[in-house]
Image (tube, rainbow, N blue to C red; front, side, top):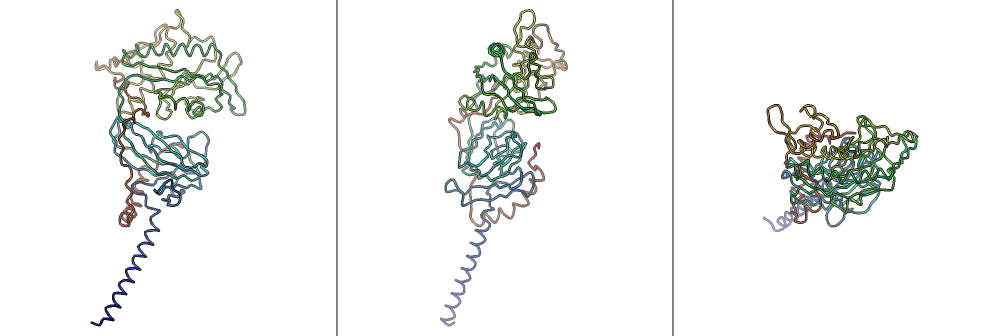
Length: 456
């Protein structure tokens, strides 16, 4: 074999290797933006959003995960993680937004973190904003896995715009099993809304506010007694003078005040204190002025949720002579009943979400409890809270005592948290190729099964 031939073959091999290496590098650079590690894409309207791993717009050395929607859509990256039941978790990430607009105002849609297929979510970011930290705390309840999502949209709304997510962090917190609850009672002095072209202005009287304060003190005592001293509570009375300017509506309840209607009014107070339940005391009618916001037969409305915190409406009667919230020995000795009832709706929901089979709060007649003079359904509430309702088999049912330890996840649960690896970024060529080869079929199956189930 000649020396010249050997050199020529060596050079050919080197050139071929260079070409192959260049080709691999070219392919690698082309496909790298579509490698989302362990995150899965999903969108409500398939094909309307663009998902890109962005190596240009970054918070630090890590690439960001970008979602862009030029048409209104609900789109997300998410990852399924295994969780321990009845345990608090906290997810944080950095978020940057550009021209994010919600399709409908007041839906809570925006750039957010959430648990897919649920209403559990962080606060939402809209508009154009530089990098900021977003936090989402949740309790795993009776679940063994959850889909943690980074979303441009919302459970009941769509968005246009662009959002970047990066620097994901997941922590496991410590369960706090104490039975001391912390309540906030927000008294809203004014409602000033425009309904179907008519401006409606309603204002609390000093007597209204005094009754609310008195009934919160009675509520504190009654909760301890009716629960058989299985729980106790503290509360703050917070008067909000800035008017409520938006209210919600549905076909079942008519108009009501939802958490999203007052978020901008109460958020700073909720941030300062770790509340376990929120009451919103409101006036929605005044018979003396012939003013009424239409509601459908409710005086209290519970079971709502303010970022994991139970949220209830306490509506004052239109007629000021109504004794429902007034203590009178010969008429009503249980004026705090509506507060008790609406709080119990949150406890009822908590146990149901934890997988417990319990009697419905409104099933008093089914178990032969009737309204009594002066105290109405006080006996029912007592037996309900102490699990002393006798069913047809002679068994005692009601709220399981564990319910008094089930409270919203909050920052104090994470003083001694344990960090859990959330995304292990392997961006080598082989890992990327394996991911891309399996991704389309995997995401197609997931979309067919889930399709980001929500209410629009």
